[in-house]
Image 1: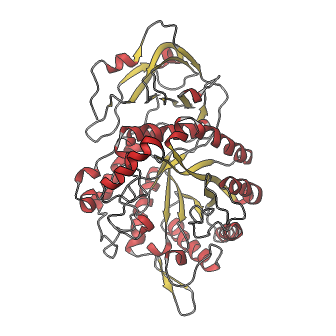
Image 2 (image 1 turned 120 degrees about the vertical axis):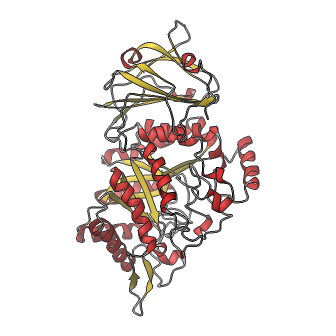
Image 3 (image 1 turned 135 degrees about the vertical axis):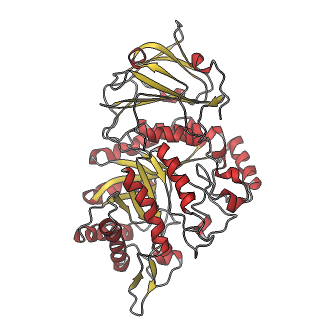
Length: 510
């Protein structure tokens, strides 16, 4: 979108004197240190990765290159790659019940394409499995995450990827997706999951694999009465109590309703969870994060949209086509960072990755992505391949918050009033985000210790428009002097329901 008025920038950053101006002073005490970085969930296109796939080999080199080019702007710092052994290297079992494995098949080659990109760009990969082969209907009765066969075949696969192929970008392993859920392959069985995590860790050590466990990977807000620990919160607590010595980082999932995000309940809740994990000193991230529109008027509109999109399953986020999700998704991420979380990966990168139950039905797509790489082939609409609005805010949050940054909140902070402010800083520079979730314009001066270049770029995502280039990549609306801004001598207007980033971080071209 490029419908910006010529005077927009001057209306946003202006010198004036006004008694209604809010004064924000950024704290000198970081809410978190050694920031990990933001990123995306990126699966290896299981329905389109080979001639034998449900859709055939549709994710061609040209299709992948376009994804790579877009990610080169976004600069994700973490990527979560989840898979299923049966989609890739697991080919059944032999007469004795031993797994038959093939690491040279086309399906594994597609995984390697993603890993090659991450390796070349220095991206940290969280690698994992959506569930054991038996859960997905593959033969051999490998039905538990603590089955020695599952442990051994996973270790061999990761040894191939990391040692033989050189994908050192794989830093963490997730033994199974959302293990606390009734829908998971573990069904919420804590003891099975814990046993599997311990065995997998031991197997990695014995194999000389420098891969740490990422856990618990639970939906923190979910409840499962059949589980020994019925709430996701309890799974986090018990992971800290029982498994901290072998956990490399803590990760959880959250899909929050729009009202929960907008009234700042997200920040309150996940500050409490951060307080549980923080004493471990381990990195803590959201392995999956997203927003829903299930209640109120937006919930009713969502239901109608599902009916209007014949290719979209009910597990879709059909507001990705709209400005509004760019605000609400960014709001959840800003609140996570304000709560002390050190990164998050968005669910999800590309509609071409998943379908309901991953059965490959082209009319049951999980529409959550920044685009659909196969929009023409699967929906007949080439416009589905275009970048969607929320790429603007999410890509900036990935690109300009760097690993190792300290993260700061304002002093006397009142985010519940609608203005969410967070800043990242290192010796190279500063990135400041001002997100106005309220229905009124906010005018403020900002004071903070500034590092880095003297000129700061300003990016604006507003209901009136947002500036992009010919590739739909964000462009700044202008620049501002770093010293004058940080000394509170420039007044900033943040329109209602808008996002502003101000940064002097310089990103080298690929």
